Image (cartoon, rainbow, N blue to C red; front, side):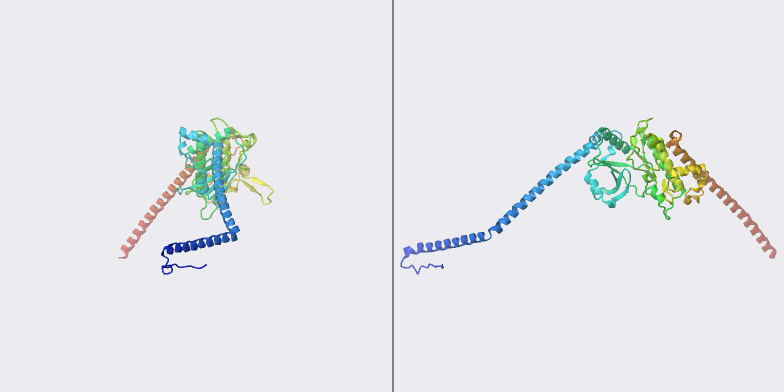
Length: 449
């Protein structure tokens, strides 16, 4: 095929044919090009048919996969919302909302945290955020969106554990009661999360660890003096006295031990871990079907009868007092590791044998506080009485400890006054001697002249 060019010279003698011939030639050329292009495209399509088919198939597959993924995420999101609603209802969230709407007492201070907020606060419950593990659960350190540091307690309750409606109400009532506690020596409950399999409790963060760590992992840079130990004992006693008698409803802690006593930035004691706590009506005991507590601190009377009273907390506090006096752990093994020794029994035996000073922590023996140590030991002995009725109340314990500290301060003031008197006498005597010496010197100087 060739390209034909039409000119007027070629058809000079046939003017009436020139236009039609040129148009015919151009049309033939165009049709030729179209035919060639069509054939070429068809040839290319046939040659690459399977490639083109695979490309379109892949694109279709990708579109279907993306659509399926989005649909899956949508269904998953809806299921998560329904699951959170189920947990919220099962954990007593509706009851708590009802209590909040009634605006009783100080319940407006309770905050309901979203599960996502607490997950982000703890870096999805990272192992590095764990502050401690206990019988009731694991405590994580977290940072909320406003920058505040909190302690988030995740219960050890098993997922398949069934709780009836009464237990739901009991949990919500305890949350509401704890939220109303306003005592400087009790860790403050900030709120809870009910959207998870088990409820999460959010507390204020207390930075300086536990009393157990301070007692049993002593630091040479920060020795625990007798003055500090007595102050901490008084703070714990005041907190328990408040829970037993000054709160709107009496609250029994049920797990008092040195590892549940936190220390703030000024090493002030704060009672924590109310996971097993129970609120009871006045003049009632709490009967349990399963004994709960920590070996070494457990009230023997409660262990036998399964009846927990305020005096059971008193017994556990007595063990803490002995820890403060001796610096020893509540349960220890002999060198043979075959015999387990109870600190409470060992202390009572030492008191009976009049050998108390043999178990006193050597770190406090140099504090010149033997009288106060003996007085606190006698109080601890009364707290550890096997008969709960013969134990003092926490209010009485707190008052007696305050009196012991007051007598210590009075003795210190008297001793200081005596030292001041001795100092004044020495100064006065020094002044007289100085005057006499000066007179003698003056007399001698006059004589010499």
